[in-house]
Image (cartoon, rainbow, N blue to C red; front, side, top):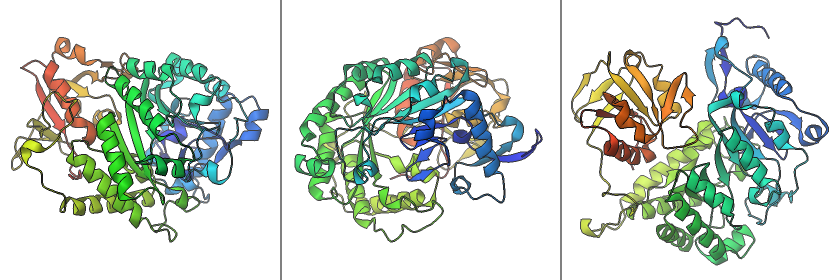
Length: 492
C-alpha cells in the first residue's frame, strides 16, 4: 500500500519494533492468549537465515494488513493500535522483545499451555542470531526483553543472552520459576542489569504447589525468592512475585499462606493475575468469557489483595498493564476485581492505628503526598482538593521523573512544552545516559547539580510514592515538586 508522509495511519509500537521469538515462530507480539500473525513458523525460521531487512519487510506486510479495510487480523481489535502520521512510522528499530523460543522446563504447571499439550521442546531455531541482526544503534531507548520460556535458566547459552542484552543496554525482565538459583541472576539484580526477576509462586503451601506445579519444590522456591529479594534490597533491580489464580489454588489456606509468605520474604513487588488459558482462541473483542466462570478466582484475588494491603503491601494488578491493554476480557476482569476488592474492604477487621503494619523498607511511614498535583488537558496545578489554578511554565527549567512512556508523552503537551525541559531522571542504570527525543536521562544524584525550577513526577500510581520520596530527599529547597495524577485513577 502507498502512503504519503502526512497520511494518518494505524500502527502499534509492537508492530513497528516488537519481536516475539516464540516456540511457535517469529512474529510481532504475543499478549496473553492473543497473538499477531506469524512471520515465520519455528520450522521455517530454523531453515532460513533471517536478516534485519527480512524482518522490516514482514513488519511492512503486517502494517499494510492493519490498514487494509478488507483484511481480517486479530491486531484490528487490539487496544494498543494507535493513529499517527505515516512519516512517524519506523520499522527498523528493536523495542520490546518477547523471548520464549524454548519450552524446556523443570515444572509442569496445570494451567500452562505447554503442560496441557505436553509440548516441552528445545528451540527449533537460533533466536540469538536473529537478535544480533540489530546493532546498538537500532535499539530504542526503552527497549526491554521479557525473557521467559519454558524456564530460561535451563538454557545452555543463558549467559550469552544476558551478555547480548547488556551490550545493547536492553532492560531484562526475567521470568523464572525460581526452582534453580543462579548467582548470575542475583548479581544482575544487584547491578541493575536485570531490571526485575518475576516468579509465579501460585500456591500458599507445599501440597498446593505440588498439585499445581507438578513438583515438591515449594520451600526450595521460597528460599530462592528470599535470596533474590535480598539482592533487590541492594541495587537497581528487584524481585516481583506473582500469583496466578486458577481452579486449584483459590482456597483460604492458599490465600493466607501466600500472603504471609510475602510478608516474610518482602519482595519489592507482588503481582496478582488470572489463568487466561480458558480464553485461548476467543477473540479479544468478545465481552463474555465463552461460558467460563471466573467468580471463584475473583473472590480469592480480592481476599489476597486486601490481606496484603492490610499489612502494608500493595499488590499490582498484572492484568492492568497486560491483558487489559489489548482487549475487553482483561478490562472486564480488572473491573470485576476492583469491585470485589472494594466490597471486601467493608468487612475487613479494623486494626488500631498503632497496630497497623507497614512496609519496613520505607524510611518513613506511608502517607499521602502533600505536594502539588498537576493534570494535563488543560494543565493545572491542584493546591488543595477543592481549588485549582492554571499554571504557565514558560522559562522554567523542568525535570521529568521517571523516564517512561508516560513522561515521554508529556513532551507533546503544549503547556509543558513552554518550559525548558533539561532532562529525565531514572533510577535504572540501563537507561541513564540514553536520550528520549534528544533529551538526556540522568540519575537521581544529578538532580541537585541540574538545579531545576520544577520536577514533574509522572509515574504509575503503585510506584509514585517511592519516587516522590527519592526526589524530595535530593532536590534543593528552591525546587518545586509536582505530581501527575490521572483523573480516572481509582483508589482502593
